[in-house]
Image (tube, rainbow, N blue to C red; front, side, top):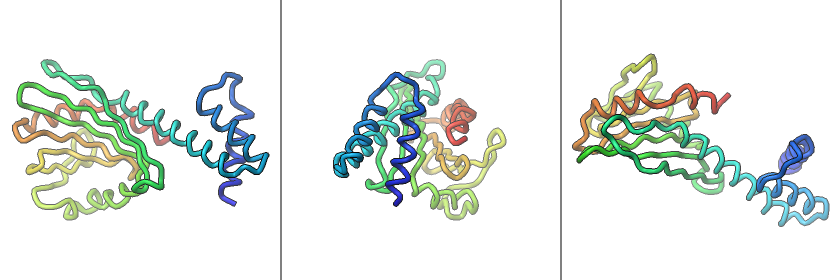
Length: 192
């Protein structure tokens, strides 16, 4: 029954979509044709492919929101990953590493993962965050600061985990600068 509801939603999306096609709409169209022929295996495969491509597009959108390198720093290309619900509960992430001499900061955004719900407990009760972690407020956001791990983490609407982590030789101030450079307004728009 759930698959029929998804298929109906996709049919409506395809029928009201603009006339141009892309890989996602092509896969949805293939799924619709296969479904009409009662070829459920092909329909499922095509819908899975469309879902994967949509998650890839979301991951790329998130990667575009990662900070540019700060003055004097260099940055690698953003790395993205996405997994369907069948793989570790699913999720989408984007990560970028920034370096300056021996210092390195990694900024990550993770969303659409059921595991995040459990992590949101840390922000409700920082005792769950572990030793060396404390709740602080940065720019009006509740943030878990872990001095041993040299990291800052926050949750947005209980659905998106945003973190900045520094290597051992990285100053906590550099981690804080990168954390403050994150496009939180852009990330918040993802959940609207």
